[in-house]
Image 1: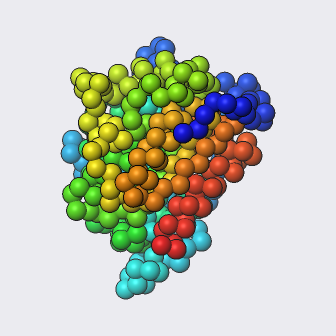
Image 2: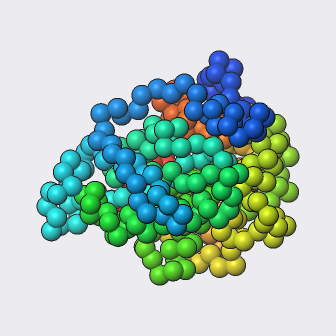
Length: 328
């Protein structure tokens, strides 16, 4: 796993941005205040001309809002009805699950990130507005993203997409949910998942890993926030032995899962969590690429296009997603 010896400092440009626009995930003030702080962050326009539509699908406890994004450079993307007889002429589809500690975030807070995934991966992207804790603790989020993934796999043709080339992607809590969906798809005989793109996920729920001490007071996400959001999401679950639906790295069998790209950040308490999951997947025979952005912090996707190091790290993961969906 990545170590602390001679770790580079936080990227100088990122540090200036963090000082100019301070943001720290915290539960101070309660859940609505936490959600407001994330919603109110300034955001630059990202690929504003993409075709985007909002829909609702049936979920286990009511309607699940989704937002669909079409890439602008893939045959079949402009018209869902074009050439229905040839699946290969249609773009693949990527499920996107937003981050936010399972308690904050929505389709709007991660709109730019979803747009990036659509364009850079050449994929239709379906972003899912799953239920949030503490009002809806585990397993509500898992139930929603799993239902949405199955629905999209069965109905991708409605969006002019090829449901047989389906990936899951997400950041932070969404990366965790992506790993869980990949396991559920394997264990339930489908839908087939071609690739999992996990941006700084929490998969082990093991705070004894070195990065939790090393980065205990890191910018954006610190140990205090992890503890608080974990309790909101876990509800009454015994965290001394969490189920794989909560901590996918605790699954007894990791074989047969789709190839993975796991992105971690050097100044993130969750760094060694993602690295450990990469080790476990590799040991189980799953192709996996681990990338440690040593000078970045948790949530660096949000700084892509502003901080060159974040842009480079983001593009690296999206290129892996594109290759898996188009060259596989």
